[in-house]
Image 1 (tube, rainbow, N blue to C red):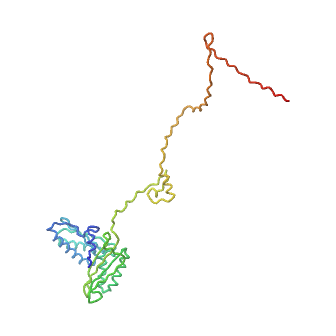
Image 2 (spheres, rainbow, N blue to C red; image 1 turned 30 degrees about the horizontal axis):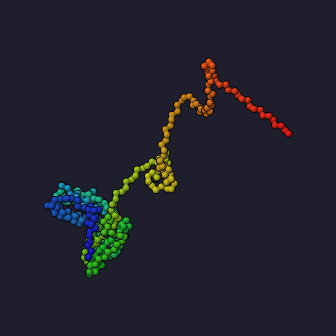
Image 3 (cartoon, rainbow, N blue to C red; image 1 turned 30 degrees about the vertical axis):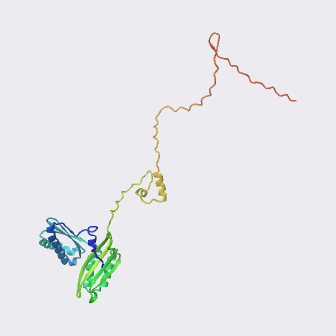
Length: 310
């Protein structure tokens, strides 16, 4: 035999929160727990036609807060809020504390497993064929955006003498996956030939396990470099953009500071080439004891004799 685990209890404390959010010491825990059970039964019987899917209770030292998740908030509130006031007065008489009632609307009742099971049970009480009721509920839930749904009916179906189990499923319902957001609901259909139990599982996706990425701040397009905004933000660059990005990212040599120009005399022309050094003759001594430079004689060029013709 397989060991069946309640889907909500299996994920309690991991991905799903408690419906009763209060703490009490050992001596006060038992009476408060029984009080919670009585309040929930009273609310479910009184608001049977209001489509209540979930009831949350939160206690403090002197007050009690009850949150009703319902698909028809108008029925709970009543005309001018008279129904809510009467309900609050009855809860205060039962508990003896100040009670605060808050109502939260369920925008998509087709995705609530408890409401899906109650819808099938209501159709069975109207003597509609169980296969037709199950198929209609499956189609409505899948159209609402669910990734999978499973409905099981157990009892004397179709007036048979022996009880049997019938179920149908669409999509996928991963019961062993902890991060799968699976909602579970069950109720009973009171028919003329006995009670029929109805259970529903609705899979709407996985719980968010990672924090959503923070939105990046807007980056202005640089004017000097010419890098596009998409490349600056981090999008996949095109081949041409990659070339531009590589050229921009290349290291640039630091520019030499410009020398300021001041008014003054015109710049001098470049110096001419220096002449070759010539050896000067040594001075010769004279009879007076002075120095007399050595006279240099210029030799005349030789004249060539003309050749005689024979």
